[in-house]
Image (cartoon, rainbow, N blue to C red; front, top):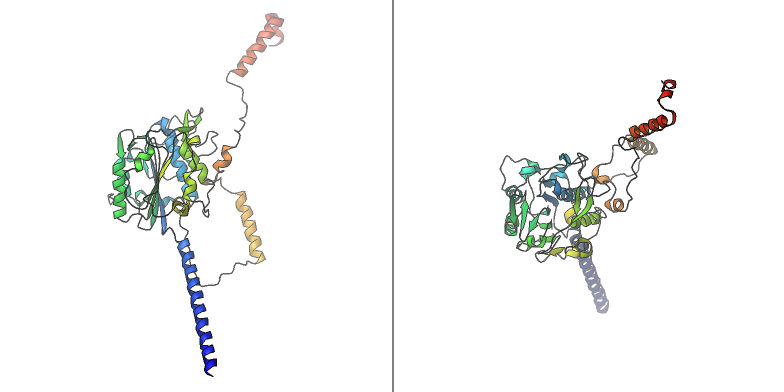
Length: 395
């Protein structure tokens, strides 16, 4: 009896040990999965997109900013979470041969201005003071909600800037400038006031790497189009418009983002490689020492996309539909297709397809004065052949 009791007690203890170890391994596995799902730690996304240049010859800087705006909207960040600052309105510029449009490709296939762009700060509202106030939240109480960065300590923020710059500064409106020290202090204020969880800073300007040299706040990742002492070059000249349409770095970043979808697993290391010196001519740079996570574990959509809202329910939901309902919905879909509106600008062809398209053949029209010259030639031949005396047989 004692032997049987000992054996049964040992078996019970062994079984309990296995159950405990299995339970702990299962729990650790669940924790790992949960940590993988919530690895960024953010619950909302914001974007601050800034073009600091005025005048027609800086058309490309507006196109740069609107291209990034188009990409973040396509990936899920709504207008309510985007602060768009454009120093000039190229779409309504009298030099624009196609009013109400801003193109980012020489075939003029991709209109990045579109029909639902919401510009929050425009023209002379784009100043260093207003930009710093947006970042730090030090704005007048009368400022409308659309002009506020209402982020918190669970917000991932994308800040994109483009314009003319130099070693340690970026010009605003060709009349003032923001220095890398002012920008670094603004980010520190944001961190102290718990206005961000993680921050991605991208700048496309000459000597852009100098703008992130003074950063000292945690959880900031920075990218620049050029190193100190290098120029950031333009791209895509268009003779019809008379200016360059984009800058090289932003052009290749846009081409890269067009391949991203909200469920993409592409990480930041891939973004670092989008524009090598052979394409950009300048040398793009990045800084990750202030960022806690490994860039290979940071998804592109952690900054360019939006957090998907999930509603948990205990109710049973039937996904089966009656054949009549399915038939009626099919008819409604057909009717909707017949009256479908033109595609929004965020739903146009991907840039990767547009780049490799051949230019459209234009309809041929006779040049001005061609018809008049042809009639003059006919009359000259007639007079030379028959003379004026035969004119009475015509009139």
